[in-house]
Image 1 (spheres, rainbow, N blue to C red):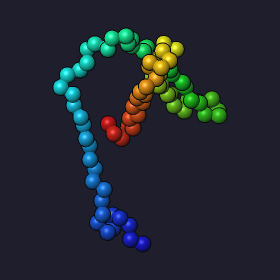
Image 2 (cartoon, helix red, strand yellow):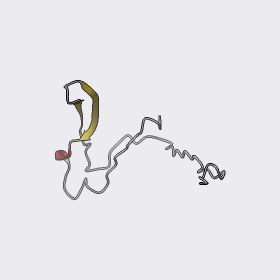
Image 3 (cartoon, helix red, strand yellow):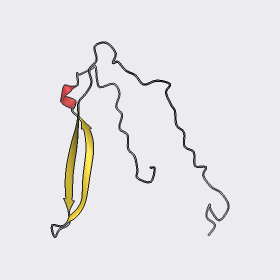
Image 4 (cartoon, rainbow, N blue to C red):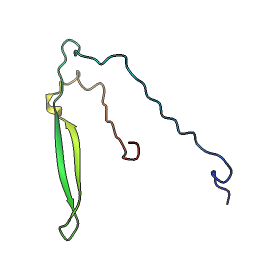
Amino acid sequence: MVTWSKAGIFKPKVLAVKTAEHEPLLLPLGRKTIDLKWLFKIKRHPDGAIARQKGRLVAKGCSQVLECDFQETFSPVVKPTTL
């Protein structure tokens, strides 16, 4: 069987980074920041031993205003291999 690597076909590994010239300092008028909260969870094996510890950062959605703050969502996901 001929695979892509045996045939010499490789996908180019492209890393594109877009940089801004400045960071935004102020929010638009009539907008407020949404608070964040860290949630931590301990996953265990059936025998009770700790399997792994997980953490995630969530936005407190109760502070959002309907029809105002629901236009955009951003959920960054980073794999450890990326770093």
